[in-house]
Length: 363
Image (tube, rainbow, N blue to C red):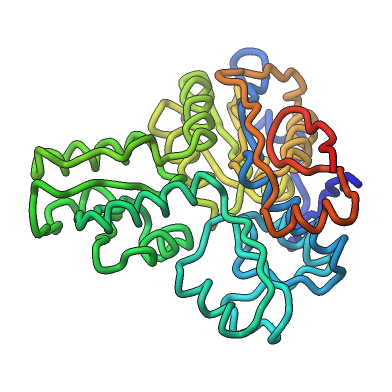
């Protein structure tokens, strides 16, 4: 059974929006009004997989299903799943013994896995496979006694999970400003890894500075910043030089959504704002604006973007041009623990997470 997303606006303090005529009177617009809609945008394969995992767990095991942390960093997704019976907790000790808990797409440390095991919890690991790849790299290079420089945001769930794989070998580097503080045991045995949702440009600047200090610093075997983060940044880079305003749909705790605002401004957008919902858009942003760029973070369902486009149309921005910079068709199998249950139940619907067709899977 395929679920249909329903827009759930967050409550706001009632206010009277200015009419399109009032906005135009405040500052005239030079040129035709239009929207440049970034593609790719929105859900990536890892997010889609994680959300489907919670939906399928609720469907087959029944509520409540516990989820450690937010399954993905999006207010709408979390509230929608809560309505279906998901209970989000900060730590496994909040989950009743013997209950089912799902680990979020951001991944967890071995200590969290052990804690769940100690409490006799049933687990489903919805960690994005691309995050799992970084975990495996950390384990591999720690085993070879490398110092690992993990570029990422200290305190972010993904970084906590990766660092927990080899805490005695890993140093967290929050950005270029921390490069001077790094110390290593052997400059000949150093490698860098990164959080998957960072700004590509800022990460590479951090790496450049690290290599000035440690010329033999090794690169990861393959890019750690995920394809979806990179693709969404490339798309907004193309749009931003033409945009008087860029609206990014995404939540405040979504690293990749926040980065999109920064990238838009860096690449020429005159203004850029992040919103969770269309009702957070301030019509004063439209004063003097001819071209609006729109995109969304990798944990954002398309229904929220459509809400923003409807609002923009109300203010005269009904002409929408999609700017496509890449095609995404990556699909991930659902977590193995869940696949076994689905196979036993003969459920062949939505056995894959990601963009592109979802062919029925034989049992």
